Image (cartoon, rainbow over all chains, first blue to last red):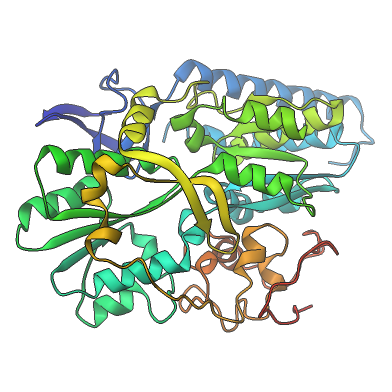
Amino acid sequence: MVKIWGDHDLINGTVDFGGVTRQVCLSYVPEVRIGDYVIVHVGFAISQVDEEEAQRTLEILSAMGDLASDELASDVDVPS
Amino acid sequence: MKYLAEYRDPGLARAALAELRRIATKPWSIMEVCGGQTNTMVRQGIDEVLPAGIRMIHGPGCPVCVTPLEQIDRALAIAARPEVIFTSYGDMLRVPGSQTDLLSLRARGATVRVVYSPLQAVELAAANPDRQVVFFAIGFETTAPANAMSVLRAAELGLDNYSVLVSHVLVPPAMRAILASPDNEVQAFLAAGHVCAVMGYTEYEPIAATYQVPIVVTGFEPLDLLDGILHAVRQLESGRTEVENAYARAVARDGNPAAQKVVATVFEVCDRAWRGIGVIPDSGLGLREAYAAFDAERRFAVSQVTAQEHPACIAGSIMRGSRLPTDCSAYATQCTPRSPLGAPMVSTEGTCAAFFAAGRRSPSSLVPAPTAAVQPVPGSRESQS
């Protein structure tokens, strides 16, 4: 989220999609602030990304990766 | 881009696959409901690297694909009128109706405009008071908040030249219909994350309990899909049948109340026909009587149409997940993304288009063959082998 402004009664914003910016209606995510991440569908932000949850999922998956490489290291017969 | 690159990490994907191989002891059939998920799954080849026996069934969640042929014929009838500016999401333009498609109609002089948001259609109506602007309001619960807002906005602006041709469908009734079917093979669902971002996932709890089926709210990146499959297989292996949220960074249990409120203001639940599947009770949204003035079907009196599907197309079986595109005699020969016979070959969310883009041309030994329980579809030919 790079910019937020009011247009008539609608809250609008500019969202940076990895370099491409687009105008997005923010009426469904009224608490969103500049710097937040949102999920956009047909010109409307429908959800604000929960960064703690995003990090938590990645940590669980990373732990799985560490476990898998430990198992591989401890058992040379396991085909990779 | 943040929260995209991390969820495409090949190392983490390998770890998730290793974990899946470790825990899977039996064959399981899991349906990903959403066409966006099907696209990622097929393009990345995720369904082909799963442990033997874990089979992904591609579900009916492509909004363009399930829009009934009759509704596309109505769109074509409206768009052909000289006073009309017909507006639509882009992938609707090449979906074949009985006789033609919106793109061909535009080539013959009709005004058909692609919009990125339905609010652009409202702006067009405000800027063109001498024209009738019609928006093709299709999709699942994900597009309903946007489409509903366009109607509210037009009402606020007092526009009498804006209307919507509504063909909204809802996911949970379709999941119930699949589970209630006598030839159902789905043992677990990956629920569509963005539908749940809007609606939450409490609606799925009675489905999981009634049909004893695990339902996992799942995102759209490769790691999201693997994580969703992991959750589903863990439940299947341990005999649990719960609703789990594997997409917590975007989905809250109660969804987005502000969006639900606007949808409920403008729309009400109604019976809806799904292309290739038929009428599913209470499976769609229609305009409430208070907003009937914005109903394009009434405004242009196009309720009676006679639709005719292409005889070679097996889109219905594809949508039900009972056959694969590679089973169709027309797939990649008579029917390609450039010259589609059916909707699943048009949209990027369609299973046929996803298979075509991934270069799948013949039934793969890694992709399970259709089962004997498949119902024959009238008009379909013998499958290729």
